[in-house]
Length: 236
Image 1 (cartoon, rainbow, N blue to C red):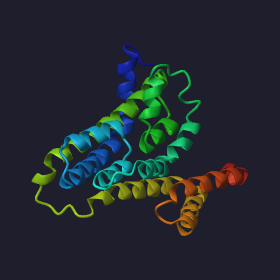
Image 2: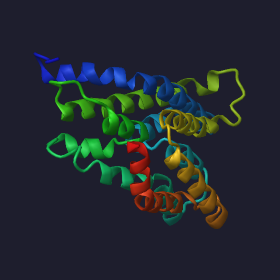
Image 3: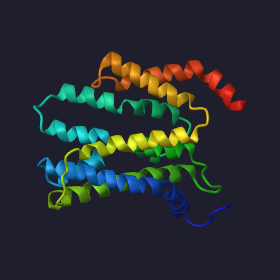
């Protein structure tokens, strides 16, 4: 199917349905983050600004706690690197996807989150839709969902008559749901089992505060080593 008219509007219309599941999740999780930051004593400007500038999901929950802790810039930098280090591997796999996107490329790199990466890497872009604009709007819409939820949560957090203890677990729940969905969509489960094993080994060796990057490296090495076997099984 070919699309006529403004290519940007056509790309927006094509991208939006792919982001609808993220809309529901990000509004709720952003709301949870905004409430968490609000009840921690911060004005709504904090979750609104951090969700727009950091746009790091779990890192933003951590940033709220860090703002309440003694000033430790090096520790903060290393912690942020460990939490967000997975994006290095996302970026490597998007080299070809982002080629030729022009001025949109810096924003695509900056705004890439787990969910935007998943859509932009796997989506079958409709015929006649500009791929660069499609990926741009996927990224932009997902960020807008997150910023909107965080801002609303920051505005209404202290007004809600609910117990907010443990609300930061919402981000963990999101990753659990994403893993379950990937598990159900993969008939072989080899990479899922590898990920669980890698996380278990890294957690046992490095501890819960430093296991993220070792887990990623173990998964990368395992995928490279098992690639012929996995691809052979999928072909069979």
